[in-house]
Length: 285
Image (cartoon, rainbow, N blue to C red):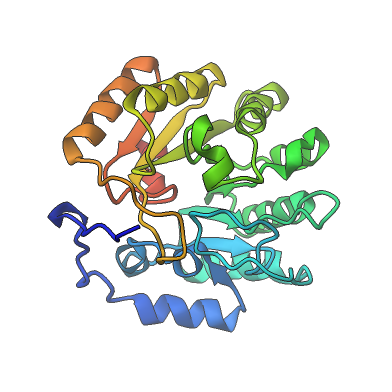
């Protein structure tokens, strides 16, 4: 399929990367990965300039091979027992007030990496109890006990992205299950109703407007608090192609509809990503 030309509203300001080297130096010193770099996020220059980053734990090789994602699929790595403390140290050096922790999917681990997530949250809280911790977790293959381990570590926000509409799952994320992802969000609230939940969806993959609206309704039925909607950008010609560049007006329409459904905060714009300006959601609530 022919690559579509990006419209002007997807141009990225490359003058926002003044602290890029500073952040990279800290990440290198503590042997840490960021999803910002691994997933080739379009906002990484801006976020790094603010001395913020979304840390990616459990290695850089994913056990799944979703068609939209730029993270490498391959032989998974050994879990680094020093990683929780290293993430906490990096958070302190970067003077973070809101930290996002995500991971590759680790279906090869018996708990999907849940205990490691828990240890990272605990290490950050032990270093500075006032840092707001948001975790962006995989589905743990629907393992309730694994999810409970993460919930009981008491991050303020648990994020799990629904990614796309159910019809496109077999093409876009064939190893995931739409209902399983919805159930995860429901189960967070069942285990601990004080924890805020968050999810995100990409558009431009060939979904219809009514399908997006139904996903938003499903998320609200799962008591999801926060929502992000962003334009899908294919990382390469080998990835799932961009079918459509959704207009800023449509993003605005989706935001208005989502807020009317009861979401506490909605970020909806072409360059919005799951962790972009994450702290604003909590502040605005």
